[in-house]
Amino acid sequence: MPQPPNLEHLMSVSITLRPKSPVIPNGPQGTRVVAIVTGGTFEGPKLRGTVDDSGGDWVTLRADGSIKLDVRALLHTHDGAEIFMHYEGIGLRQEDGSLKLATAPLFETGDERYAWLNHVQAVSTGASSGGVVTYEVFAVRP
Image (cartoon, rainbow, N blue to C red; front, side, top):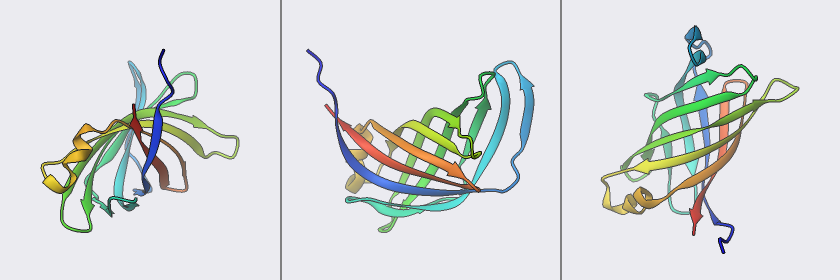
């Protein structure tokens, strides 16, 4: 019988976004908003560093009022490794205008010190308000 997964805290992430985002209205899947990353930080028990300003979130605004996330970001560790992070997820707008987020990050790196991340399926919960997105990211342990 399947057991609930064990979750191990991987990191806390804070990402800042450009104030004005390009919008592609009324596409076949909804309106797209390109949320451009301007920086950020991450820290956890096994890794820490900064978020590069090269990433972005190709958000889809859906007819039911929810949003679909499609994020790519580059993480620079404190000791010089580069880690690609990609995640998709769902966001729900709250009454105060903020967003509650749930995502499923995956990672890629060629740095041997962090190669263990290549085998991690993560999940996260987060929030977005005032141009800052924050997440608590957990590795799923079977």
